[in-house]
Image 1 (cartoon, rainbow, N blue to C red):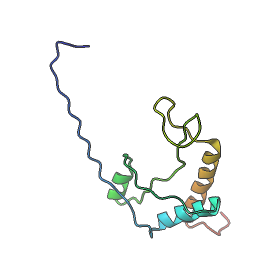
Image 2: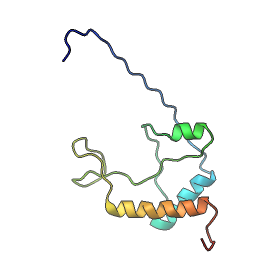
Image 3: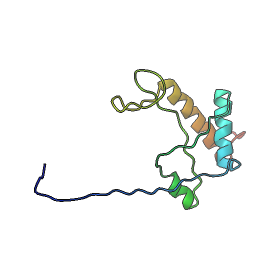
Image 4: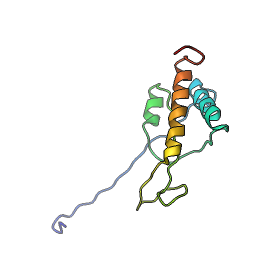
Length: 114
């Protein structure tokens, strides 16, 4: 568009990886909530994308990335640049129940009248 501009642009991104120990109370709460709600242990993976978890954990706020995997509108798991990522409504309902269970456990309210 601007043939008269002689410019060069280089992008370098460095976002450190992050994790908290599997034995951490937050990890236990998420794992238990998932197992209780869906009847099986969650699948664990290492992902190569950026999130605020790296910064939150760095500054002492325990953080995990957990959620429903996206599906393409045409069906199946994955990502489609043409269709975007979508979450099945059933998965959204499951994950909402899991978040509530994990929050109750994390806040120490499990077994209370709350």
